[in-house]
Length: 416
Length: 162
Image (cartoon, rainbow over all chains, first blue to last red):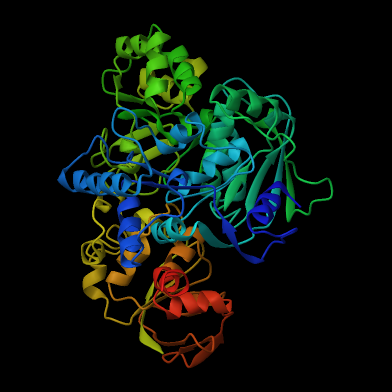
């Protein structure tokens, strides 16, 4: 079996599962946020439930529209808070809360071999620690909060083998943008994307989180990377002991194997309006930008901020650009302060936002008006994603975003 | 038996098309329906009659896990969604709220305005306007049960709570 099949089998009480099979699995962790949680709570109450299956295994993270952007959002968070208090589930208040997919690993809540479901499509992020982790809707989450189980169809696995040395500035974001560009936004529809190869084995945790985070943008059920020494070191730092024996079998069956020569990949930018519309950054010669966002569950971690700071150090951003930096969690924010990164950002003319999803989904903290153009380290650029239906979002890595802020147009970091 | 007019959409209709994120600070079906398909077919909710059917191409519902998407569609009075292919979170969300979703490779043959009849029990779609019939693969028993019972929560009520 593949690693994904192994985790599903274990949680379904079966010796073996095969792609296409319908199973009912026990879950280790159930997640919801301020926009999906309230719907779940409604369904939970409609069902007449009087208790949750296990309070410790339920996490509510108000991160999308917080600190609350308006009265309606405040009412939604009140609902979340009230439910958490009543049923004693995990809840993160403003001041402790961060963007969920950066927060949960940091809190030691994600482990290799875990079965995690979340009412957010980017729940696939935790595949980076070797968990089976997938996004679902509010009703699935409500049902899981009651029963501790979820129904699913076992996905076939695609093996991606990345080999070769990465070019300068090429990180997890570029690898995944290149991959989605190659296979399309439904290229891995319903499949498990297993990221392997020597390039992956040498990839840092932050870069692994970035890659698994965007598996959903190819339509995948989950993204996953076998746990190894790098995973173990990371998990140790967050107080988790790990099982490194979890691997795909030698004779595991894959629907397809896609080999990718990483040495051919240059830094990528995905142009509007699909994450698969990715090209070499040098192909964008005159795209003027109004706003830069550096953050999100995709690229808001400490190494992402360091990368942006390395470009912005000693620079001033273009006078017609606003650059919004969003550390993904309070710990990351604090670390950025300690390392002098915040100083670099502010001196360059950027603003720092509290941890929030904010502008990524056109919520707050940097919404676009008509005709405006943004380059962002986020994960989606559909029409109207960051604001006005006639606004434009380009997706990129932290260095390209930072360089573009300086020049006022999309540019390769070496060209500033 | 579902009977209604077809409303046609193309490939990759995503969850930001179906309901933009800025409207997600409500969970009210009618409020969400009011903004359904706003950027790609303004006034959709006013045009749709109860029982009508959305017909689309590949990867319908791609993007976010927001359940508000099928809720908005259901709130407009749409009785079923037929597409060449569905994004998976949207697919299961629709089943879970009792909105029938049908995978049909020949979806391109249906035009906007065609009168359709959908028989979920027997897996048959009739295009009355074009005088054509199609069969589709039915879901496994337990998923059909979920749809029949009006969604996952009703099913959970019956199986776990009662």
